[in-house]
Length: 194
Length: 194
DNA sequence: TATGAACATGTCAATATATACATGTTTAAT
DNA sequence: ATTAAACATGTATATATTGACATGTTCATA
Image (cartoon, rainbow over all chains, first blue to last red; front, side, top):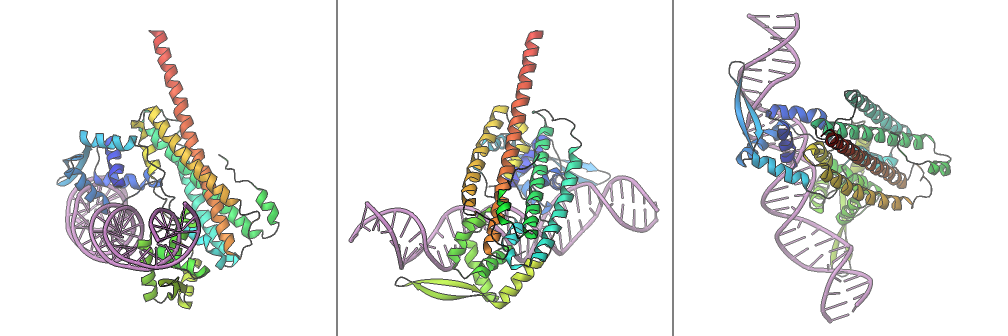
């Protein structure tokens, strides 16, 4: 697999940065589809240096603080592009603990169920709001050859995903609140508004 | 975390079954939000027995084949319900390698990008079809207190998730094709100028 | 009755991930 | 000058997960 390897190579392919910077990326935009702790990043960078896919320059920040500024090598670039070109089969669906809980929720009284659903709803709404604010940075669709195009489509994907999750939670709440008219419920369709 | 623990307890809380059966569940409906290999399941069951959260009866299948039929204990039931009641904060967004690839895809020519997107699109459509067929088993919404209600809402969630992913991929393809035309038009403009 | 698919249970090694431990520097604000 | 937040880089331990190794039985069917 070595997915972290390619995530790091991809970032360094954009521009050189330190391990700390990579960690920050994983906590910002990328966090919508990737993440890693620094305890994973530093050893991986070490490995990538050994494999001659990246190298670093030491920069002095302030008086004595040594920063390792990592760059991708030609070999690294080549390996990254090979990975990027490969048409990989669809991944397994991701694990989702909240769905797992809802799967088993018939053991919960309806009030508790609604409470858990409402709590998740609030959290997802909050995330959607923050993603929407980020989206305001894009008045138009960036052009295809730029980094910002990648930033834009995954941000849009994240927004769509959150909207969709919110819709599902709302449906679950609706079912819980309306035990009757079961025939009617099935008439609704699951179309997603954009 | 011990999420597998609760996934197993939840299943055994529905009804007793073998480790093999649990593995099958993880490859069927549950696979839309949970999975585990048998190499993870058997050791976990062993642990749960030690913790007295489950126990097993040995059943003879055929002449000599011993099957371990696992059941949940009262202690296990209690611990499962405590877990189920707890209002947990939202999980980190799941990792998604295809989104990661698309994030970096500006290094790909437009044709390759569209090819990768179309390939994913076909696979997600196929999964959506199979989920939709499963949904045909539910002519009405099952009542709240039954296992089938849990089955139903997560199946509906899986369908919504696939529809949404498909919409996102289609949007990405649309952007690629439109921008491509724009660039072609630009090329034409240049040639006219020349 | 031979055969292959599904049933059934386990271990082992490698990798991936999370959390805590450990140590310091720089920068901006008070 | 003090302080707190952010910068910066690592290691260690525990847990989670994957994929391979290992072994055997039962059942349907050709």
